[in-house]
Length: 74
Image 1 (cartoon, helix red, strand yellow):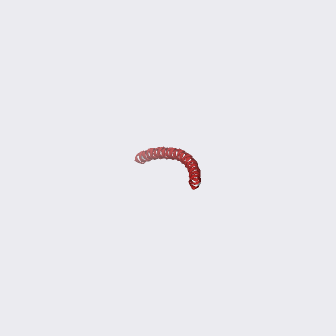
Image 2: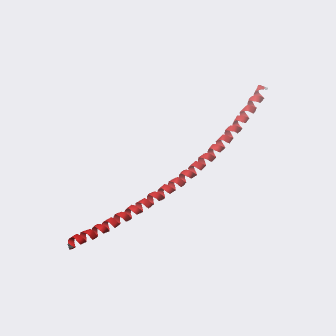
Image 3: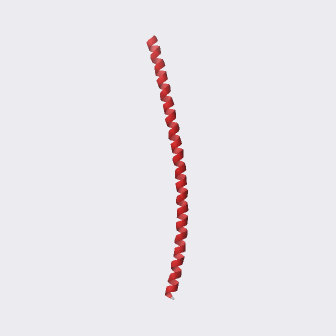
């Protein structure tokens, strides 16, 4: 019986170690996911700002081209 009791205690210790390792891994995965979500949000915001600038530049270029065409046609 003593061998069985020792084996069961070792099994409990091993299970506790596995649980702790799993909890640590899960916490790390969640932290990485949160960090990636923040990085994605920053990148999306930067993309939106770049699109707005590109749209503004495009509109200004269209206006300048129209003016040049008007001048050249006269």
